Length: 301
Image (cartoon, rainbow, N blue to C red):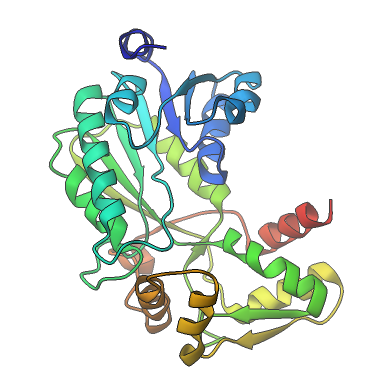
């Protein structure tokens, strides 16, 4: 479909990038549940088929193509932006800088009525770490005179998906989050999606920051306890020593593990936190118990 044709059909619709992922999918489900027209942006038409069957309009646009992305979002009622995850970025965060340029150009041409950008807890931190990619993109988008909400969620509870296999097979959950009795800000992707959809339906002017976490903070000890309860067997935590992190990440194929290490240190030391603190964050309703049980159900099915 040509860009001009896309521009004629985007008005009044809610555009969701990353619709095939957990958060984007949750946003789309919430919008569809409210009876709103949803346009999903995908890179692979085959991956969008399921959402087309659910009633979404599906369009093709790569996240590195500002013209196609801008056409897909042209004069939309609302746009949810979920940037691609980069876990092993270049030392200068070249990927994030390029994405910032694309998004700024696309949104400037599209002029949607409102935009929700999925950012992260700690995006305001001046200390360089893996989350600084969002800091750079936020800074670029702030130059646009458009209504933009920067949705900053906490650590995803679904990151526990990496712990399912070792918990089931060995009864061990390795933990980079330390100390084990420290309560960390976490949130379920379902709650992120619901809030993202709610924000897309609100009206505001200028830029705003919305921070989100679960009703209660979570300790690594609680994660092990939830796995033990769900699996019906003992599950213990195993602290991954800080000295072993570089070697572990290198073995995983990372070329530049420094940003990831800095992020983990930031969570553990507490300097990665909400700009408005725990008291100023919105609270989700999904519990760690629910997320762990769902992760195990999926792994067992």
